Image (tube, rainbow, N blue to C red; front, side):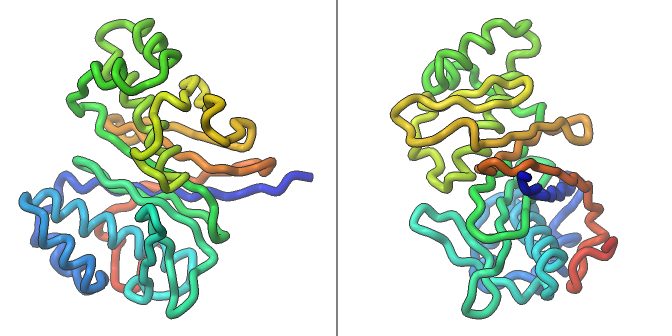
Length: 246
């Protein structure tokens, strides 16, 4: 009998937050995170970064039973972080995303899962020429079949799915975006022979959130079945203890 993996997803709107609102959260961040936040030129990007990293810490606290400030993060050779407590990695896998107006995290129990998550605003301005230059022909053809007013949204559906995959593998945009492609409805990945991947072991889910964002999550799940649990978090729920709505 196949096992079941629970993938939990938390998202939070940040478009009404300002720097005064997120200032109390800085105490939950480590020195490196505070320094990275300070390097952003625009205030909204500092707000997004702080909110995303505090949400991440709060979710890990919920799953791992330790305070948000207790976690530290160790990046692999491709820059993908893992969560550590003290000198040992925690038995958790996660992936973080932040964009204009929303931040979110996908997480599951168990270390070393290839888990990726991405969220984008549907109002984002897109260059459809990117698909022609970098996407697989199957995806370009699918986009061309969409009614013209829906092509930007179709592009973002494909983009979030592709981001979920490359974030799951941890290799980012070093991967050839045309070497894998998606059937978007329901989302299913296919691979060119140049990628040593088996499409049968990959699972993806995509949702429209809050009427204005599209999100995609992917996992190299093997033969396991997947259960998802999506939650919208109010900023007021974030405290130094974790998530107040526990």
